[in-house]
Length: 234
Image (cartoon, rainbow, N blue to C red):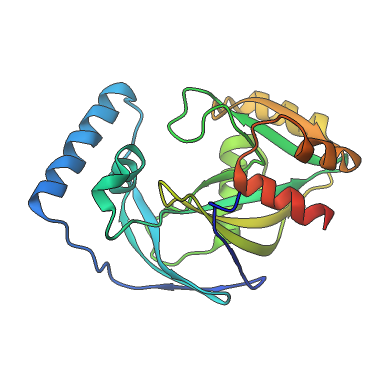
């Protein structure tokens, strides 16, 4: 866990969007294009959308720029491409507390990122969904909840931002956020099954009293989720 750096954040950090400072050399651009083409051939549904990349993260502010997803995808597949100037692809990750406990999902093994690991959904890349330039972390998380679990924003309350956790190899940086709903777990599971999202192959409930056993057990838990569960029990 010590290899996954954690940065404490204020409950509502300021998000500052700046112009992109990046300009890759010809060899790097060629490698990015090759990796992206190979990825698209293997996963035809890949889409080169606009994603938010963090250039600096402090307790009260996240400064970054909009970039192409294909660059972040290439970094995940070949981290050595950006060794001197890595892309911090920003993602949101919710700690979803329902009426019965904590909701956890196992990422589908074929997934491009951390397949087979247990994570607290919803979670996903911060992207330009409506073509705008501003970033609202809570809106991003609620949109992911609709896509991954079939839950409407009105059924959820996005709470405090907790911290940022950075993957030491891919530089994907998760922003952990509290998320609450009055729905029971059975209703959430039914909604997930009906929405048809395949990012998770299984959902389960972690009752509050069972969180310590999960943390002490043999489960493959995504580090950001492990940090959030530890936060929950203090």
